[in-house]
Length: 231
Length: 231
DNA sequence: ATCCGTTTTTTGTGATCACATTTGCCGTGA
DNA sequence: TCACGGCAAATGTGATCACAAAAAACGGAT
Image 1 (tube, rainbow over the protein chains, first blue to last red):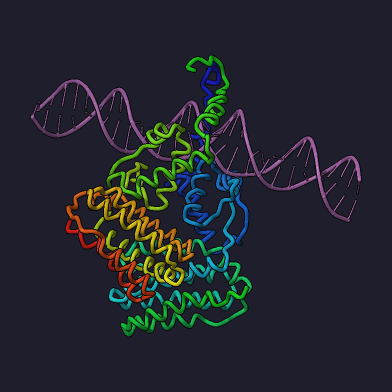
Image 2 (cartoon, rainbow over the protein chains, first blue to last red; image 1 turned 90 degrees about the horizontal axis):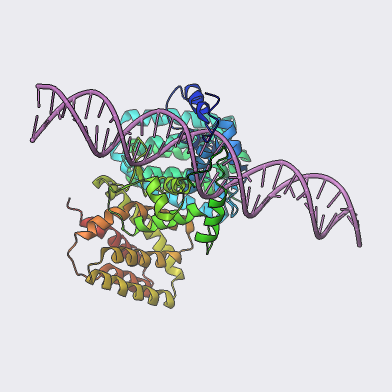
C-alpha cells in the first residue's frame, strides 16, 4: 500500500491510529479541548494577559490545529479569551469599567436565580451548601486562590441549579468565565483569612424562606468581590 | 483542474485568486460569514428548526468549509444555532420555558441599561428614537415581520448604546439572537396593526427624566412580546 | 401498500499543507 | 547606548482531502 504512485496524499493511518489511541472514553476532540481550557480559565489557572497559540494548544492536547482553533473560537465568542486585531490569542485583561459591569450583571442575574431557587430549596440542598461552604473556608484558610474560586463558584452553582433556569445559569457562567483570570489576579494578592460571611447569610435566608434577605445576601456576596479593587 | 497528474496538492492559486476577487473591502472570511449569518438569524430571516450545512454555507459565501465551520461554531456558542448530538446544525426551536427565561433576562438587563442611559439621554437621542419609532410603526402597518424586528431592535439598541455598558449590551444582543427565529415565527402569524405604544411611554419617560416610569415602560415593552405566546 | 434490510449519499470531523503577516531577534551604524 | 533595518521564526488563516457516522434513498419480501 506504500506504492500508490500517483495523486492521493494518503494521510490515512495517522487518524485511525490516533482514534484507537486517544479516545478510550468518548467525545469529540474539539469539545474535550474546549472544556479543559474553559475550566482552566474559569477557575483561575491562567493569569490575565497570558498568550496562547493554536499550535501550542494542539501539541499540549495531542491534536492538530483544527480542534484547537474551534475550541479557541468558541472561548473567544464567550469572552473567555480575546483576540488581537492580528488574531493573537490571550486571556483578557479587564478594565475597571468592565469589571464593574460584569459585577452588576452578576448581581442582576444571580439575585434572580437565587430568588427562583428559594421555593425549591429543600433541606438536602441547604446541607450540601453548608458542606461546600466548609471547603470554601478551608481554601481561604490555606490562601489557595484557585481552590477558593472553584469552591465559591460551586457554592453558587449548586444553589442556582435549583432555579431550573438553564439559560440564566449559562449566562451567569459566561460572566464567571470572563472574570476568571482577573479574579485569580485579585485573590492572588489577597491576605485575608475571613471565612465567607455572606454565604452564611445566604444559607440563613434560605432556611427562613426570607426572599428579601436572600436577595440582599446574594447581592452583597457578589458585589463584595468588587470592593477589593483598589487598583 | 481535475488533472494535476502528480503528487503535490498545489492548491496555490485558488487562494490568491480569491483574495483579489472577493475581498475588496476588508476582513477575514470567517468573520464576514459570521456577521451575515448572525444578521439573518437575529432579524428573523430564518425560521426555527431550519437545517444548515457547512458545505452549503461555504458554497453560498464562496468559501471553503473551514470558515463556515468557524462561524457556525461561534454562533452555536452564542445560542444562535443548535447542534444535534451528531453535529447537525439548525436554528433553535425554543420551548415555552426557555422563551420565558429569555424574556426575563431581557427584562432584567434592558431595564438596567435603560436606567443607565437615562442621565445621558440628550434631545438628539430622543428625536432619533422617535424617527426609528416611525419606522417601527410603518413596518407593523405593512405587516412586515422582518422589518418590524429589525427596527424594533434598532430602537432598543440606540437607547442602550447611551448606557456606555458594552458587556451588558453584548449580553442583551445575545438574547435577541437566540430569540430571532422564534420571534419571526411569532410575529409572522400576528395580525395586529397597533403602533408600538410602549415605545411612546419610553420616550415620554426619557423626556421627563422619570426613572421609575422608564423602568416600568421598558419592562412592559419587553414582556409584552411574551404575552402573545398562546401556543 | 408497508415494513425492513441494504446501499448510496450527505455531513461533520480532523489532519495537513501553503501562504501572508506579524512578531521577535540580531547585528550594524551613529 | 540606543535606534534602525533586515532577516528568521512563529502564528493565524484558508483550502483540501480522507474518513466515519448518520441520514436518506432504494428495493424486495410479505
